[in-house]
Amino acid sequence: MAAEFRCEKCGKLVSLDEQPGQTARCPFCNKKIVVPEALASLPRPQVPPDARQGQAEGGPEEQEEGEPQRSDALVAVMARLMPWVISAFFHVGLALIMMLITFIVKEQLDKSVKTPDPHLAPKAEKVARISPKVGSLNPMRKTAMQPIPTVSRGFSMQESPSPMPTPMKGEAPVVISTRGGPGGGRGGALAQTGPRTMGGLEFLGTPAQADDIVYVIDKSGSMLAEGAFDQLRLKLAESIGGLDPSQRFHVIFFGEKKEPLELDARRLMPATPEHKLAVAQFLDKIAPTGQTLVLPALERAFAVCRAAKDERSKLVCLLSDGGFEGFIGGTNEYKGKTGNKAVLAWLDDNNEKTEERDLHGDLVPRRKIQVYTFLYRGDDPEAVKVMKEIASQHNGLFTHVGKDE
Image (cartoon, rainbow, N blue to C red; front, side):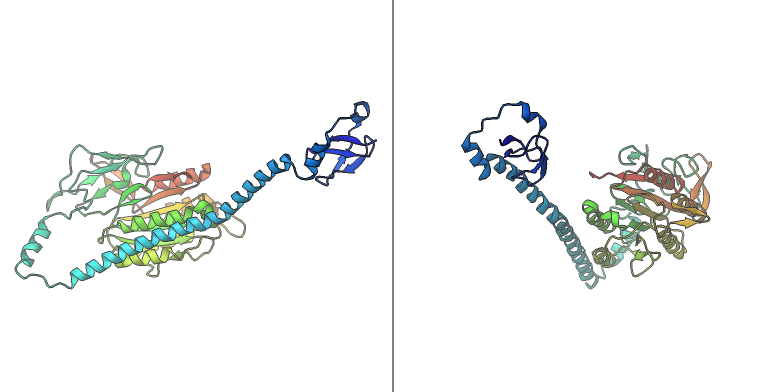
């Protein structure tokens, strides 16, 4: 007598001639099943003939199962297309930035070929000498701005009670700073001496002030996740595009190779429209790959800063999606240390220490080169720790950009 029961694999009602406890194959899913022992003591179920026919011909149950399969197929297609869609948006955005920079270059070139009016030129020159540049971030002419670390973004802006006037010839230099720890402490990142003008910049929502900026950016394979690197290239282009022509900059990318990838000039360049356009073309060719070998890139960044041989303020923006621990086939090594400890030790030995007096006349320890750190789309506790330590020890700020930002 045939035994009727539901298949434990697919749930279909089957009718088999095997005895309870024997192994058979389900006629619907073709998987091995065991005829339940309990069927021997149960009455035979009454199954309408039309129900069996509906199952054999693909009834409502199979139709319901077909719908999730079609949904899964749609999700798979979308997953394959998403990287292409993100890449398309990036290239469109980069193209718009390049068009804007090209327009600015053309406009400045058109202005440069115009013959100046000999009657107006002396007057214009006189005005330029006595008037501060519109939009400049001269901390001596405007209200001094101090970064205060916060939990969410790593900074906020706080105005001092009154502007600091530019010292006249023969007066003591003015120091804008707040008292802090060994690394300059809170607010020490914007400490300055003398009447020199410092340019402003912004990178990933973090403002800073420096005459010369070197961007040291992670291009390891993990930066490809969820289109993060394409978004980062746009933010980097925006930051460089906002620099003043009086400022200088350089860009270095690091991955698994000992030779980092950098702009062809291999030096600080004025932030002119021509150089900004060259950066946009350079960024379009960067392809993330490999691991995180950062020390060669830091060596190049500090070498570029020292090669300038001037007293302009220097800033290194160090960005990575994680820490700098070792990996198979290589690691960051320095004086017997590896990984994060090696990076901290190298920076401590190579970033010259100095002292400056604050508003109270006290000597405050400083570093020749500021280092701002950015943890981009990563949340590893060790990475957060090392990035915070680097910024704290080198008069910088730490910014954590989450995966949803």
